[in-house]
Image 1 (cartoon, rainbow, N blue to C red):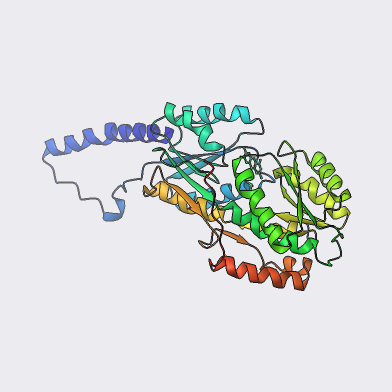
Image 2: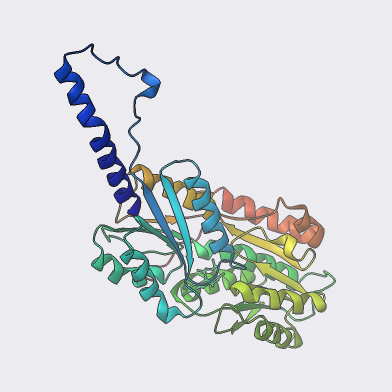
Length: 361
Ligand code: RBF
């Protein structure tokens, strides 16, 4: 919005400089000044549109935040009048509301863009204080708020993909598989999407592979402590767990390192991250967050986004998937396991198998 003021001042200056001369020419009754050539005519610039991107945490190491930034960058690059600024809120969640409030108070932004299930609630008081401001919140859901649009992913399906693969691996004869039918999860914290979608989806998948598989579920308590995450991973592996799904942001590094040292396996969410640890990361489910952010930001800029809208995106829509096209997947996972996985992938991509999102909001 500050750009508006700049534009106003420039317009006013231009008016003072040029308009009086125009009048003088008319009074002189001299020859009419030639019409400016078409290409010299001032093009009406679009109103500046500035986006404040609030990262609830830090960008590095958190796939959904990295994809959020990539998506807005790509959308903004298509317009001369669109700018964005990324602000990291850090790990003190109690401070997020104040930080978003300060962003709003600068008056710089038309839109606040952010990502995770807690953010609609963080943004409600900010929306009340700034009724002209809009909020696009992905990986979250809040229907019918006139200043917000939200996009939720079917995380039951995302977690089912890796749960099924984990179940197949733990009962396989792959070199890192133990005799125990145990898979595990390490998560940053518990929240409604975790408890109602990700954990049930993962366990449903693992049990669909083999009903006897159990899930060792551990909560780290933050999204950054890689040392503690490695300790958790080791204690799980001591108990016979051979495949661990890690959903712990920057702390994922600790899980990967511990698991790599013992030749076991890691499952990943949100992005194609096989290259982080080839042979150790054996499965990546993905959310098409970069594409969603790109599409929705463009709609917001062009004025076609419906405020109050709460969209849920599924595998059959192409926004939730599993990466089986990366050669690192093929190299890491035995052929028999991949063959069983391929059948399930085909069913889910074709919409023949799907899972509902429970209403948790
Ligand atoms: N995921 C991350 O990768 N890094 C984070 O820092 C992070 N912080 C979160 C904070 C809250 C309050 C919530 C509700 C979720 C957070 N997530 C984080 C998880 C993320 O939103 C998503 O559920 C997972 O990435 C699985 O798709």
